[in-house]
Length: 123
Figure: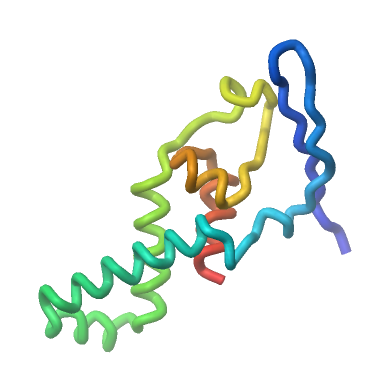
């Protein structure tokens, strides 16, 4: 079984700091603060929809299911909150993966970063 592994090296000033090896699974953190914040915001938005228009909410639940509404709202939260940022100018590396908490704290990240945050929130 193949497990993706990344080295996290950051350039600070004139030196490199090696943060060690990370495995792909290390970036999926379902109980992390960032993931929990995304989940809270998603449920909050769904509850606001229910309070505003319970009839439409029930129709949507019956048509696509509550879980699908929840996952779509998680995607909306991540898509709206996290602004796209390329890795290179910030970390001076071709590709630097952020942990979900790092993406949430900075409210910035690239494709992998938002994917890790999204997956962590859904699990």
